[in-house]
Image 1 (cartoon, helix red, strand yellow):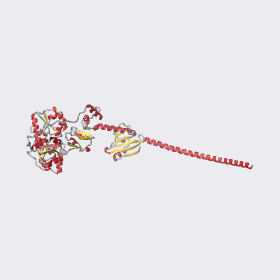
Image 2: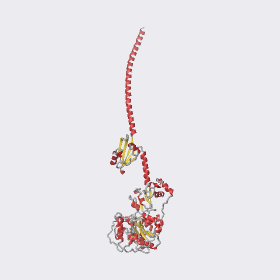
Image 3: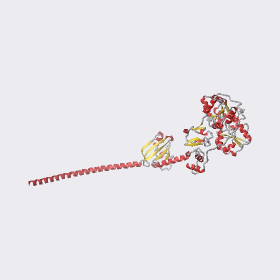
Image 4: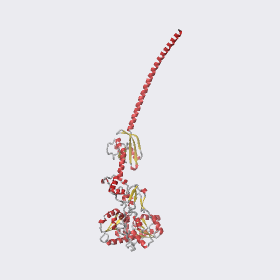
Length: 560
């Protein structure tokens, strides 16, 4: 069963949940982070860290409503309720009865019995160190990742399970629903076989609101509580002891990271009773606690301490109830690959030597080697290495920009140069090797850039002369409003213009030559025509004379 839901559409590929996860129980597939239930301890850190609501606690409201219809459902209420709901238990119980619960008791009843078992184990002297087993997230952390420390884990049920056993020992037909701030309790309830449902405080608040139920004023209880009400605060388990066993130090450790540190070195400790909590500041700061922003853990601690002081009589519980537990080791499915595989994966992201391993943590893993191991196990992708991807993108961008035949120039909102290629430097006559960071007006009139930045529109110049170099360009300036930058493309059209000018000169020269040729031809024609005219006249006269002579000769022969 999945206890945390994942919404792929909301996941923004930021790896924030992976950075928050103390056991890296998150697999990144297709650039989306998913929780691996086999490795998750349900500490809830990923839920708290995700501001996009890509991860949420699986709801149990419908399940509990079905139970309520069957009747005879008892609520086991964690003492941390007073920190979120800020009311007395009597008023809270009345509200639960209105909702359909047949009865309600404090989980502190079970906590009192658990403390009694801890006390027996300590006084037996058989434990070098003893770890409290009240936090299911910490229990699973030990089972999965520190199985060698299981010998120190108290073989005792949590207060929730102990209370459910006590309730069902008195009436086997009862259904028990636990109400608290913890996600891990949902899985613990399913594994226990005695807890029938779990509601977080957030779900409880929703049910009250949907039913229009508010808390009635109720007098504080007296003579009904015990020190077990301290359980949800730091040193709360320790404060629940009525006396301390000799030869043991009683210490409290909160937060998974600090707990991991203790578990890693616990064999070096001796004579310690260790109260451990997955949540910093204990259960009052659980992932589903209410009103964290109203006074924080200090205010919540104050409320629980005040609540615990409203009485002193211990709870009565069935002494014959068996609340012992047997915690077995669980297997971490991940494997450590051979060194050559780790090196192969590291080199695929540009890490050829230890000096290349930045260990920046941007991918969510503390070291590059940890991330490489995750890649080998199919839980991470090579592309999650932010510095490598940035370097590759910058390299590709640089190569593309530098290989462009056009001049490319980008400026920020202040018109300072943030990128420029060699072609643009040549066009603008920039001799500085590193013009980045310089104001553009040092090299070029930035008017078009300011227009693009301020008016968020593209500016096109069909033909512009760069005075310094004598180059002619077509200029296009485009704004990128989302980043408050503008980039320009300079297309060098000098050769084209020079070619056109040469062509125009050639045309003009050709036209001039043509005019001269035509003029000369006309003159020649005219001269030829004049000469032809004179020649024709002379020829005509000669022919007439010849004709007359022939005719006269003919007449003379005829007369003779």
